[in-house]
Image (tube, rainbow, N blue to C red):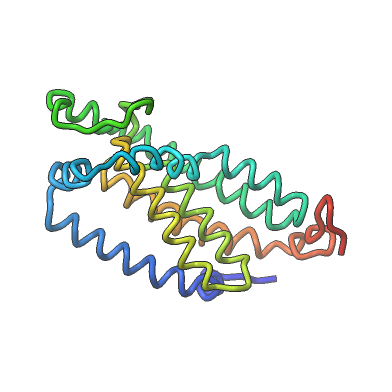
Length: 219
C-alpha cells in the first residue's frame, strides 16, 4: 500500500486548512510584535478561573496522556494505537533534540530581573531551560493530526485543533514557554506527523486483519 503526503493531507484537509490559517495569523503577530510584547500581552490577561483550569489543560499535552491513551487504544485497534504512540515518539524525540540544540531560556529565567511584573500560577513548578520548542504543543498537535487522520467524521478536526491550540496557549499562560516556542512546536507536531504517517502507514502489515484487531475486539 502506497500512502503519500498528499494522501494524508487529503484525510486531514479541513484540519490542515484551518491550521494554516492559524499559523499565518501567528506569523503575522510575530512580525508585528516583539517577543517581550507578546509575552506580556498574554501574561497580563489572567483570572482565577484560568489559573485553576490552565494546569489541567496543559496536562493534556503531557507525554503520559498519550501513553495512557495509546494503551487504551490497544484494547480496540493495534494499528490506531501504533500510529498514535510512534507519532508521539518520533515528534517528541525531534523536539528534545531541538531543545538541546537551542538551549533557550524559559520566561522566568529570561525575565529574571522583572519577576515582579510577571503573573505566575501558584502550585506550578516553573522550569527555566530548554524552552524552544514547546514539547507539550508538539505532542498536542501530533496527536490531533493522528486522530483526525483516523476518524471518519473529519469535522472533529475543528474541535481537535481548538484543543491543541488551547494546550499551546496554556503553556504561554503558565509562563512555561514563549509564543515562538508554541508556534514552532505546532509546526513540528503537524509536519513531522504528516510525514511519519505517510511513511509508516504505507507498510502492508498495518493493514492486515491482525493489526486491525484489539485485545477486546476481534474482526
